[in-house]
Length: 125
Image (cartoon, rainbow, N blue to C red):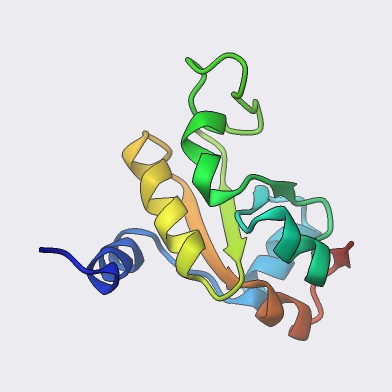
C-alpha cells in the first residue's frame, strides 16, 4: 500500500526542481509558462507570481488535455517550458508528475510561493 509520502517522493524524483532565484531570472527573461496550482482561496490570501496562470491541481489534467474541449487551456503546449508553484512545493511536484505522464517533458517545480516572494520575485493579487 502506498502512502502520501510515497507519492510525493516519486513526484520529487521525477520532476526537476529549480531555485526561486533561477525561476525569477527565467520569469524576468520571459522564459516559460508559470502556473500556480493552488486553489483560488490560497491565492486570494497570499497573491501569486505576476502573470502566472491559475490552474488548481485538482483539475490540471482537464486543462492540460486538448481532448477535453470545454476545459482545455491552450497555455498547455507539449513543448513549452512549464514552471509550477504552490504553497510549499508538494502540490507542484505532484502536478508536475501528472503533466510529465501526460507527455509534457519540460516541467519544473519551482517550489512554494513564500520562497518566491521572499526572494523578491514579482507578485500580484
